[in-house]
Image (cartoon, rainbow, N blue to C red; front, side):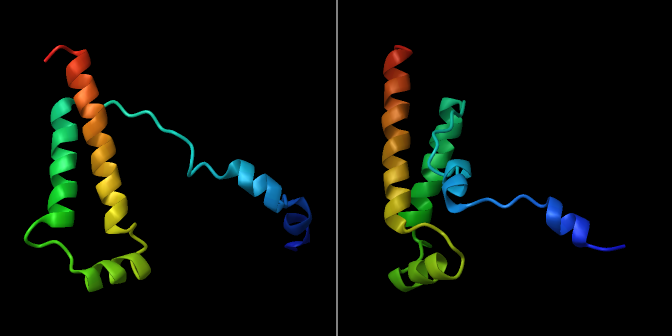
Length: 94
């Protein structure tokens, strides 16, 4: 069986189409309970600042080898979670 048919029927996507298909920057809606957000925030805090948190050198390795975001990214994510958690608590009257 020849692969020619597969090659000719394959779609090619140019760079402008790829930009349209890239959804990494799109917002996502999640529904989490307050306790789930609290646990996620605890994990982020411990991962960044806890007694077993990676050193600066280990963070560089995690970023370059494992592809993890920087420690600053997790700090900003923590702040965002805290902001939305505080707003939800205020909205719910607690």
